[in-house]
Image (cartoon, rainbow, N blue to C red; front, side):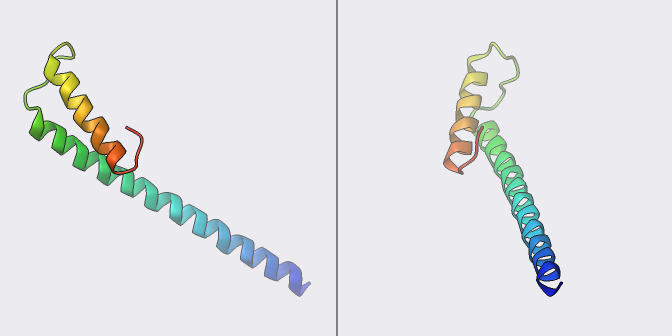
Length: 73
């Protein structure tokens, strides 16, 4: 009985740790998005129309920034 309770407790702790790790990665991604959007807006201002070449430049800046920070754009 003690082994079963111990296994259940360890399993619960492991699942909580996994959830906390996933949450930390999400926050990290959110911060990366904020940082990369700000960089793209700063380096390619005024891009609003999708056909505007500045929009492609802004996307390239954002994409490169996200990859540099270790995230998928």
